[in-house]
Image 1 (cartoon, one colour):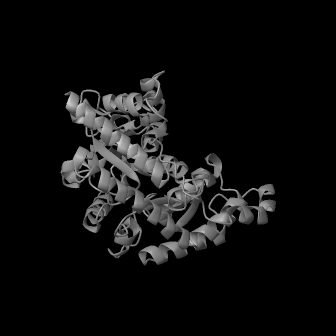
Image 2 (tube, helix red, strand yellow):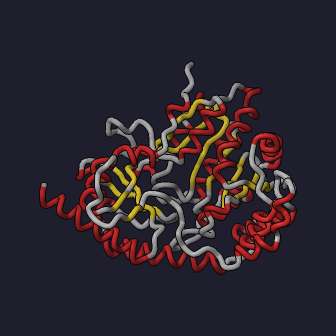
Image 3 (cartoon, rainbow, N blue to C red):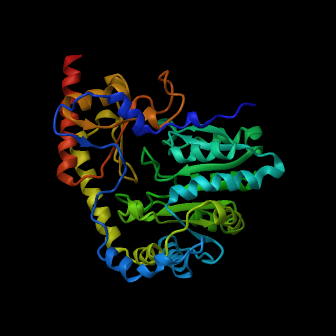
Length: 402
């Protein structure tokens, strides 16, 4: 069987640059494409790094300092009411992306004894999942996440595919999901964990948007796993300070869960992955122990979603997402995501990302993301409102013209 190559991995932002080419924006540009938080970072970050600057002269242990892992364990206990072994069930990461990529290689190695070569990926998806699968020599298998299934993969359909499950090394789930903002409920996660344990594969739960929500805090995969009595077996959660604390440049995250797997992953990372510098770990521990800035951050996002509620109403399939900071808007009546992206840029200066650039098998218009665009609500409230008003005005003109 021919495995997919690196030519299958295409940056959605590079594709968008090629699509827009030298088209001039129709107004002062507002870029809503990249999910890079632009809220103020927590106070005192610079002071904390300077206080620990001598640590830049030392090689850090790849698993993380005891203090950082203890801070993460305390945060997990406070957030989810579960207690992990900080020495065995938590490791530091140089940003969650690094861990999500590396984890696939370790999962495939774990499954070699039973010829497990499939990695299950929700579609649309975060490109790192695919990159890790291809680098590991796995077969990526895409699970459509459509509106009809709550913008999450249909686990009942997956459960019926015993042949596929028998050769699965890992299943990726993202909750709150990128790009749709869907949250997996406890019953859904229970089903996913049961499949992972029954067929002995890893569930990789990407929970990087877990602290951005409007109403109820999303349930976590480790929280659900703990309720089964088997602890974190077969479950690994990934999170970071990028979205929670508006610190994407800090490159600080963690993986937590199945201790046996994390030991295997640490062995691999010890020779093939970047450690988190000691001063970064020092500041990270302090940031995980502070919730005040997280609550303030969440209020800023909620205000922007209030504005989206008022300006968008029920147009473009809009529903306030349960979590995350993206809008996932349906553009089929405007010719699909690509055409809408060109129109909005050319006529109003608003840059949005075609949904098909976050998915596969979408070129014929039959995939789960073809008719959508993604907008990241990362700007301040005034800029966000301006962009959304321009979008509504421009698409309203399109309807009149049609």
